[in-house]
Image (tube, rainbow, N blue to C red; front, side, top):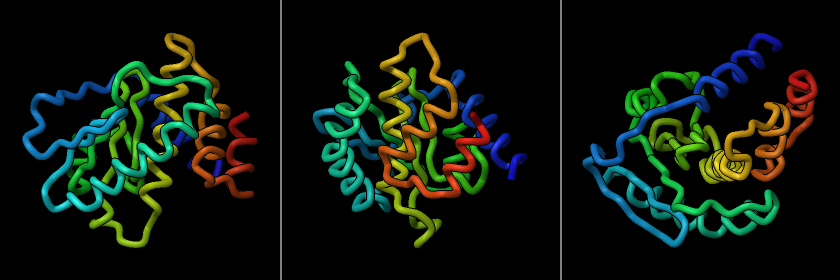
Length: 172
């Protein structure tokens, strides 16, 4: 359990350092709303449009809790499969991961639920990653302790359970 927690924390630290994306190379579909741009493939259109609507619904709640609103649109990439997800996250997320955030770039990467049916609530993962982006941008060049960053994201996305309490306590 401790090794798994350490691996998760290490993966998140590496991901948050610098993850280059090039939106200009995305050759699929794009939709834009007031606070978000989502990049997706045609097969994921219903999921992508639902995520965009969910992101807008949750935006004000997340930004109100954290006390900061990003100054530019948050980019959401919906990877069509595990291979594309690994490419977009530079392989820095464990294979069981469904989402990643790059706060200083205002980006979220999610994997299409077509490859993991019934495994997780992608809207909840989106809110979790959005929390990382908003907090990271609110802090600018400063860094929140991992226990605070993860704990806040878990609280905001309503995934706080006893097991997570133990994990965050160990990280503390």
